[in-house]
Each structure stands twice: as structure tokens, then as C-alpha cells.
Amino acid sequence: GVMLMDISQKSSAFDILKEDDILLSIDGHSIENDGTVEFLEQQFTSYKYYIDKKQLGESVTFGVLREGKIMKLKVKLTNIADDNLLVNTLEHDVMPRYFIYDGYVFTPLSRNLIVRSRSSLLSLREAANKWATDEKEEVVILLKVLADKTNRGDHNFSLWIVDMVNSKKFKNFDEFKSIINDFKGKYLILENEDGVKIAIERDKALKVEKNILIRYSIKSSQNE
Image (cartoon, rainbow, N blue to C red; front, top):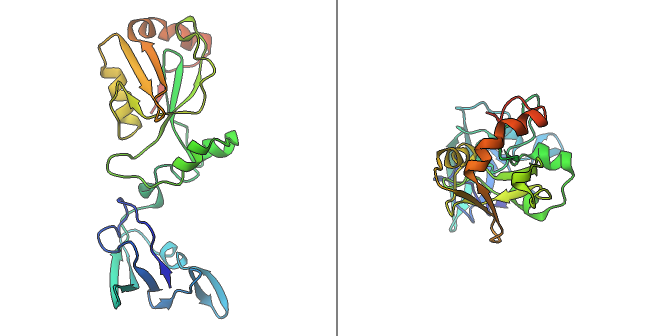
């Protein structure tokens, strides 16, 4: 069997399986110590094979060793993989979401972006290995800065994770945009986990928005 080391808060199994449970079998198929199961005679693959065969709404039964006791636990599959992950799996034929404010281009971090940029930034790769939680469903990054006199000095910022806006954390990309759009004060302060900050003057940002879009031949300041 294999030991369960961690489990997503968003997982269908969150309130059923526990950390340190040892998964002995799945739907009656023994799980080897390397996490594989025999799916054809003398042919082995990941035990997740028997999960991937299921449809949403169906159930899978695990044989579990917990605190010295063997039990069978049924888990109804209600989520897809992306529901559990902080950064979605690779997507195809999907337009990327973005939001432009004062030339600062923001987007949710995606695996497509990490692969395409060949980024070696440890912070991005670490984020891609984390579970989504009730408090944090997406990572928002400052992708690049479209140069303008209002954002002079910040043109080199790229692939920069935004952790807070005006000292407020946010759950996902939509909430991030709402905080910015609803802001009525003078300066928006973006901050990363290291305390590095970017200040954006709201009035100037609103005045130059149309000109920036025209200059860079962009039809809209955002793509939902």
C-alpha cells in the first residue's frame, strides 16, 4: 500500500480519508508499495487508473489501514482535478484570462504559462505544486508591464506573484479584479510575499487606460 501524505481541502475525499492513512486497495485491486495496481496480467500502472475510469458522480472504494485497523471507505467523485489544484492542469483551445490596469497586465498563473515561458522561477513552480484551499483558489501574477510614463520604473516586472492588494488577500482572479475596480482611494498598493510593493495612482491609471490600449492594439482591458 501507499501512505497518504496530504489531501486537498477541495477533494471529494477530504472528510473521508486522512493523512497517514495507508491505501491498501482500490475497488478490490491491491495497491503495491510503489502505488501501482495490476490492470492486466503482469502489467502495472498507477492506482489512479481506476479513478480515471470513473465518471463524475460515481464512487470508488478504498481499502484503508488506519491506526492498526483495516476498513473500507467509499468516496463519491464530485470534483475534477482542476477543482483541487491552485494552478490548473494544461488547457487547450482556451483563451487566457487577463486584466490590464495602467499598463500592468495581470493573469491567473497557469501551467500553460509556466511551460510556454520555460520559467525557472522557483516561486511559480512551487505554486503549481500546491492545493487550492477555501481561502486561496488561484494565483494571480503580474505578467508584464506595457510601458507608459505612468508606470515608469516598473517596466522590468514580469511573472511577479501578487499576494495582496492594499494589504488585503484575495481568493481568486475575480476577487482580485473586484478589489481594484471597487477601489476609490488614491494609490493601489500591490505586494508580494517578500514585501516588495508596487504603487499605482488610480486617477492617472484611469486617464491613460484608453491610450495604452490603442498604442498596443488591444481591444479590451480584460478577457473574462
